[in-house]
Image (tube, rainbow, N blue to C red):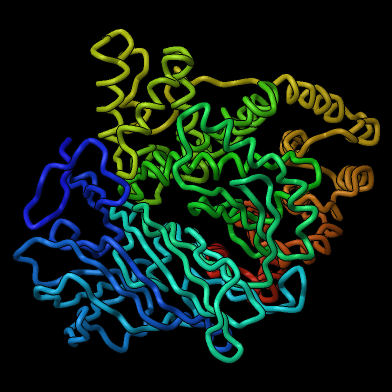
Amino acid sequence: MRRFLLASVLLAAPAMAAPDAPSPILTTPDARDVLTYARPEIARVTHVDLDLVADFASRTMRGTATLDILARSDAREIVLDDKGLVITRITDGASKPLKWTVGAEDPYKGAALTVAIGKARRIVITYSSSPDARALGWLPPELTAGKRKPYLFSQGQAINNRSWIPTQDSPGIRQSWSASITVPADLVAVMSGERLTPEGEAAGEGQRRYRFRMDRNVPPYLIALAVGDIGFRAVDTRTGVFTEPTDLDRTASELSDTGKMVTTAEALYGAYRWGRFDVLVLPPSFPFGGMENPTLTFATPTIITGDKSNVDVIAHELAHSWSGNLVTNATWSDSWLNEGFTTYFENRIDEALYGKERAATLADLSWDDLERDLKEAKPEQTRLHGDPEGTFGQLDYTKGSTFLRTIEYTVGRARWDAYLRSYFDRHAFQPQTSANFLKDLRTNLIQGDRALEEKLQLDAWVYQPGLPANAVHVKSATLAKIDQMLERVNGGAPFASIDTSRWSTQEWLRFLNGLPRQQSAARLAELDQAFRLSTSTNAYIRSAWLVLAIGNRYQPAIASAEQFLPSVGRNLLITPVYRALKAQGDWGMPVARRIFDRARAGYHPVTAGAIAQLLG
């Protein structure tokens, strides 16, 4: 595969682009991103400078975006991505007005913003976001932990940032960025870059300005912002925790191993290249477990369970600092290069830090998810390389990581680790495709060994549906004991006869998901009474219980769902509950709609849109 770096002419890219130089653009057909309107082979954005005001009254970000452009000598226009932006003016760097047009709107992709640049290589766009911008979650004070001040956070992945940043919103078009963000004086702004003014600067009456910089080239979905009543606690010299002050003590305690995780990851696959690794724990409406924004991972408060049993989420987001952030899937057809690699790497961090059995437990539970998704998906949805965002459920994560683990078990850990470390070095700060990964694998690991090639079944893993026969299933002794307990209770033993006092979240999930889906009301009442599942403060346990109970039309569980669903915004935990209600037709759908109508305003737009689509 050839890689190209765009300049006045197209030049061959070096093996590893310097972080402060434009990263290469891949030009092979499989690297064409159908979810962007951009034509980066003609003109591309290399740097974005934002000067914005966070207006909580209008729920908009307004100001300017200054874009640096690298273009062919004959280029006369640049095409950007736009999702609902309200644009008032576009000029060149000397303030000369430029002509621009917005194309037809696609409900998901948005529209093409085409700017006639002529010979200009810097443009300034004056604009504001829409109040319903898909990337931005605006929370009233009552939906925060402190209940006193509003909150704003962004979620860029996969193509949401085009709703508040006019740029080329594609993972294959890496860009550096800088920002000046003005916010109400009693709030704090943080972003996924170097904090140039940690305490802020006076910016007029009742306002404060915060400035940030990211000199490394990143995919644009990783530009992230949060504004709120935010405190900070250091873990060590390069890691720390941000969250609302009322939650700072327990959050910092739960995430006290963050520094050790970074050191452990570096020992596996090389230096951490992003400076700081901090974690921002957001209000409950955050739609995901975590988001790997460079220097500042965003995380859901549902991982704070008091026993560190869910800090694997932080290990996962840290691992993205290599797979995803450092080496990035060029298109969303190859999301597994991001999530599958990271899930594998996460498990290796867990093993090194917490022991082999902990890692085996997590991998074995992931196998359960893999089997479930393979069973429920259409065949074409089970390929690693497929339609953009078209892989079913968690298969990018589970099938992708199982593929890499199978290679490890086949060639040996030492050889595999040496390869992966060199892979991250070779492709640092570059986009990647499945085809190019397989080419690299064949060149630098397989090296013409036909027997090994046949044994690994590389093309079957990446391009074919289903699960190849050589897949490695890691089994956990911890979960095997849970399976024994399941046999007992499924044979009629009282639930109260089981000692669950030391169970981790993972053990609970194996138990609850392993119970037969058909249960009597009396048996469900016994289960709930024994373990108080309807009032569990562990969101993972509560979600699994509600799916089981609702699947049996267990009416007493509805009150728990009424409280739980509006209080949690994480898709992984609430979507299965809404789906279970929907599956119960006339009994469940009125409940689902009633709860969603009340909860919707507190969900991030990503979550609200997904649930609205699910319920129809």
